[in-house]
Every structure is written in structure tokens, then in C-alpha cells.
Length: 240
Image (cartoon, rainbow, N blue to C red):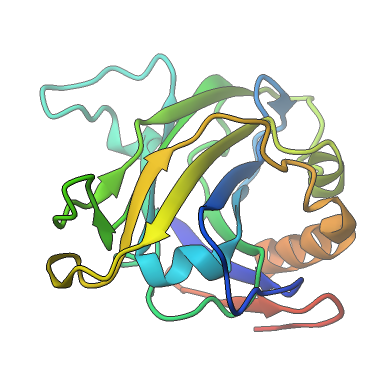
């Protein structure tokens, strides 16, 4: 039904961070309430800012997309042909490990559920930090409340435009505050985290708009059903 792609865009990585630190996850594309032409492989693009802090803490991102009118059964799922669920983190099977290759980092999922279907769609996502402590300094994986946004697919509408989306800045994002490093052995020397409210930096990717758009477009065209691709980028070059 779809493929997963990863784009790592080099900007800067802080080697010795001071705390607290904020991790920002932006939904770059699609944009809320906009209308796009249905396409065979529709990109869903998330960006992680301050990936250098997020990666060692076991960041995971769980996403699903469905028509807003799709009926649900008792398990919470509807028509499987119109649903797409996926996870980002590590090798796309769990949570991130080690150090981020670059900061910011992008996750791109190519879905085909919008192909040939006029509908209002909803994307729902939630974030987790596996290596987290609660206020009692005991192990407690952190998870955000689900966030959702809607967009439309309609025949005759404009095709996805990644340059415009990045330059318009993200309108949907999460902020997580990492309060401090924790040396408690029960928490495996990890963090205390909480959801944060604030303005964030949703325009932080604007200088990378052309690079993001060109390489996401190339990845969509190169996609072959049943394959899993990784795309690694600096500001000037991408390698498959």
C-alpha cells in the first residue's frame, strides 16, 4: 500500500546540550484544511527539530490516515483499503537509537490511500519517548495526547507542492520539553519530559524548502511497490 522513506537534512547538531531542551515535531505536509488532487503516492512529511536531543531518548511517532467519514468497527479500524497506519523511529519498527545523523531530520511516508478518492481525510499522530522518567524518577515511557488535522482530496485540485508547504511553515506541531538528564539507575540515565505549549519554530525549515521538495519528489517517482527506501541528504546532495 505504501512505502516509508527517511530524509536526514544536515543543518547543525549540538554536541553538549544544556537543559531544559525542547523537541519540536512538525507536520510539514499536507497542510491543514487545504485541498489536493488525489495522487498515486501522496507524501506525508514530518520534521523533527532538535533531533540531537530526541534520538537517544527513544523517539517514536505513530501515525494513521483515513477518510473522516470512514466507519469504524469495535477495534477502532474501518475499511482497511482506505486506512493507512505507520510508525517512525529507528529502523521504522520502534523508537530511535543512538545519535541523529542530522538535525533537523525528516520522516516521509508515501501513501496511496488517497489515489482516485475524493474525500476529507484526517491524519492522527502521537509521539513517545521510550527512555523517560516520571517525577518520582522511575521508568515511565512518555507519550503525548493524539493530535489530528484534516485535509481534502478532490479531482481538479492542485497537485501537492512541497516548496509552498515548507515556505508557508508548519501549522501543526508538537513541543516536548526535556527537563533534565537523570542519573537514576532505575531510569537508565534518561529524562523527565512533558508536553509544552508555545510558539515553537515552525518556519525553521524554510531555508531547506527547495532541497526537501526536490528530493521528496524524486523519491515519489522512484518508488516501486513493495520496496523500502532510505534517502539521506545534506544541503547539497542526496543519496539513495
